[in-house]
Image (cartoon, rainbow, N blue to C red; front, side):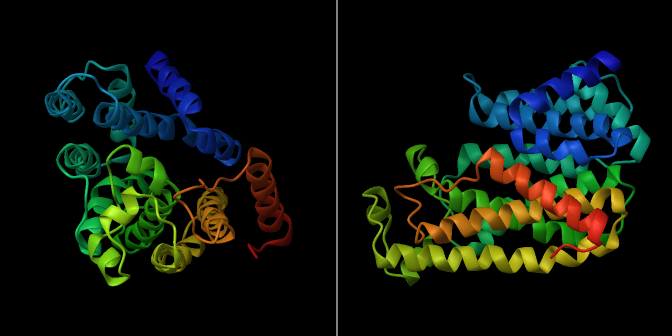
Length: 283
């Protein structure tokens, strides 16, 4: 079991720079369980994104092994650790199954007609992660999960708007086609990487949408224990900093990828830590 958890930790710290830095502030007693959840997420995403064989078949194989976490004996080390995490915190299977389904959706869809379609994707790809983390911290109620869903959806959208160019190179468009039509901007314009006023107005609208979701999720901070507040606000502030960076580029994410340097990340985290632990506030 310890070896399985060690593998989860190694994978997490190798692939998730943001999580690695943020984990400085995580309660030590919770870390191994969060590592197992992140290892599950990373592995299923790798199947959906980089696996060289039939991804749908491999996702089915992974799901079958995962289901053994509930009354069976999974074989993959990540799942051996995850089964222990599931048992300790009473985590249901639904959030995990949604994450697997999100990767099936990735194999079938590379365009989203409406924002409602994109929300449905986020329902599977992003929101379950926040729900799983809440379980580890002892929260199972609908109210907190709904607030977490807003934040996770905002983070997912922020990632989409940060990576418009990269996703386009991979044949994916996450900007809802109905929104593009509303701003008089076509898919051909996007493929030609035309970052004119129409595109900037379109992205300004999308950034505003993500900011609104972050605001909707903010009340969750006052509804969790202190040992979770810091990480929660850090993920929100980190997402907002990415949106700030998009604005600083005048929304031209076709020719530039907005990023936050490691120095700025650490500064943000330490500044937030000081405000929370010493001054008792976030702003």
